Image (spheres, each protein chain N blue to C red):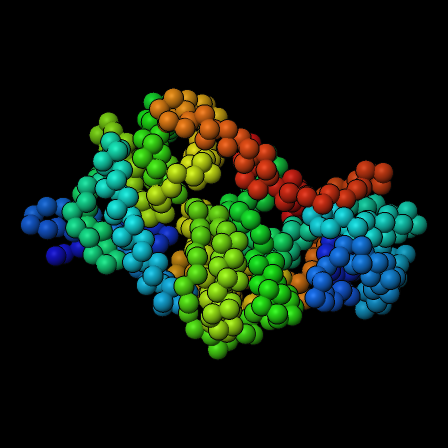
Length: 197
Length: 325
């Protein structure tokens, strides 16, 4: 299996590989030199397993994610999407609405993403795919869901955030409660939106 | 002509003197916490008793006469009210007596700017870690030059976590260094690890470590508490470094004195080809030199505040402070 590095996140490397003539993506969690070995192995194995599990769950909830092909101890082998990340695109109202809907579906199934920013949303064809479930969790807590909304709020411009919030609130079963919790968190100070502009 | 800076936000009463971007002196007295921790009024009394002496020492060390001081800076916040008030009052009296302008300084900006100065960096990702604060920041030019918080603790500061743990298992809470010492011969035990994006949380880790203190050895717990909490800081800092595509990293604040944390962050920086820097230890612990340093820059930028509007702000958010230089 020949492989080529094509992306590097804070905790994993992405390779493309060719298996039986099919181009796939391999997300591999590399060791971190700063961590003691026991913690390093624990985090890499735990996150790999959890990420694969939550990707499958997202798929079953009707959210577009890369399809899983195989699972190793520190590596996920999956379908390769050749799209562009939303962090490199101008985010439109249509995008924002789609993002809100997708997040609502995840949350309705008690999947929280944990790092829900435009860096982890890929536009491929006409569709948006949610990627990187590395920090995702299975959680029904309003606070966890509100953090997903908050991270996206911090990344979106004032022009498109309302479309995201509207779509999320109308499709999410607990939309009102989550938005209420978000408002509360912002008032609390620790979690106020940190952009001054 | 020189600028005198006063720091009194917590346990330390410090006075520094800065001139042309150099720190000529950095004198301090530190309140010793016993078993009871810091009682704000007691610490404030300690500061009152030490104020005049520390100011004299700072002037003498810098070979500067009081009449040569052209501006007074003091810590406006964040910090403990009664302690901040001692610094405020001292600064106001000096400024009025000398008829010089006064500038209120944000404590966190002091820590960051002095580290950036010693590191010789322009626009670093900053990890600011102390008793009450744990934040990842970077300069943002708009709407005014300030430090934007990229990530921070969702509950307590990392230093307070170490001290609370030390007290909980019957060690002296000597600014985290007790835990650091006990960690030296420890091994790894599993404890909660909590990061969310570029934010992190320490209370789950602290609670579990305290819960295990009856059944797991002290050295192992100290080692694991340190390794896990520092790894959380490194992971989120690394994410900030990548997200902002920065080539500079610096660490500041009391916990930046930890050799282990420096070693780990050095590895993070190296992995990304970034430079890594920090201030000498006397400037990582609370000190007046950093306040004088920042005050001088604010003074050169003509950021003077009329004496009747110079107050304290116990919860002075770092984004609210304008950064000069």
